[in-house]
Length: 116
Image (cartoon, rainbow, N blue to C red):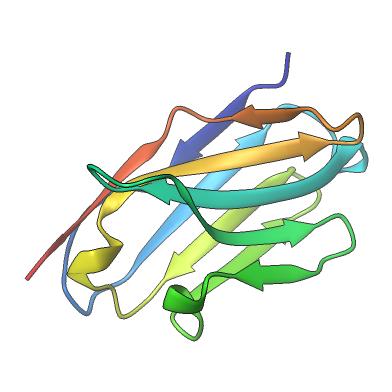
C-alpha cells in the first residue's frame, strides 16, 4: 500500500501564495505520474496540475501562469506553488500518485482557504 501525504494548506488572502507538498512512500522509479486535484463544496474533483515520470507537466487552464508543479525525485515529493490566489481556488487539494502498475493512490487532502 502506497502512502501519500500532503501538507501546506491553510488560510491566505486573495492575491497571496501558498506551497503545497506531497510525498509518496515509494521510490520515484515506481511512479508513473503525480498530480494535484481539488474539490470545492458542491463541485466535482478536478485536475489542477500533474507531472509525469518524464517530467512533462499539465495544468488546468484556470491555474496556468499562477500555479507551478515541481518535484524532488530524491524524495518522491511534488510541490504545488500557488501564486495570485483567488477565492475560486479555495478547495480541498488532493495529491495523487499513479505507479507503474496503473494503480492510483490518494492523500487525505489539505484545505486551502482564500479570503477576499
